[in-house]
Image (cartoon, rainbow, N blue to C red; front, side, top):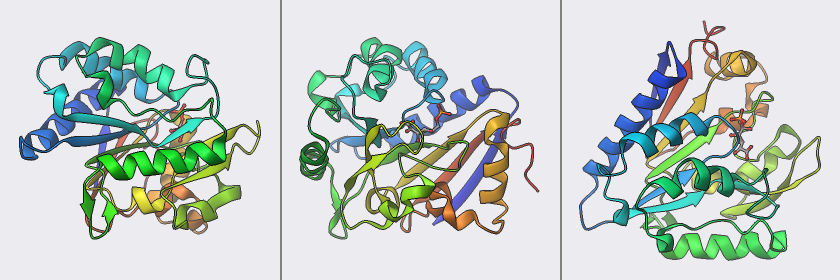
Length: 242
Ligand code: 6PG
């Protein structure tokens, strides 16, 4: 595993770098192979999705791109809380990706059923490496509590699940979530972890400085054993790094 940490003066520069890295990794993948891209949710990806929508509509062969989600809130796809809705409005509606290449987690379905259904769909469409589906490009955010995907400190055990996806719950809102587990995250080829803003600085420092207690944070458990992890930070999120 290789780890890269890049710090940017602005979120816009971070987004531009993200696009260049995504484009490079797609180009490195044989033309006759699909490219699996797992999206993260929350607000951070918006600026990145907008950058891609405004610059890469025609420079990426979207027919090869298969889009999945690393987690989803158990809400309807038109809810303002939906990670799918955010990605659709900021990216997917603005690029020529075939609808059949978009695999959303059905937040409106019974969560236990949907977690297993989505895992099977993921398994069917993503190439296998050493017996398990290997995502080509996996995006993750970091919460102010150090969580990633929807694996919170209170349910950290989900990271080590043998299942590809698990049912989770937001610690404050008690909102049901469906989340990828470490079985997907730590089996990916490229994992890009994005953190911006002062609110993330403390946990980013705790994780990247390997401070005491960091192993209680799911974002600190991201170690793709056969791949690379790339941390993209703006200077505010990196402000407490040693
Ligand atoms: C979600 C995300 C979650 C997110 C972090 C950061 O569904 O909320 O996938 O893991 O990446 O909570 O969220 P922000 O980008 O909004 O700070």
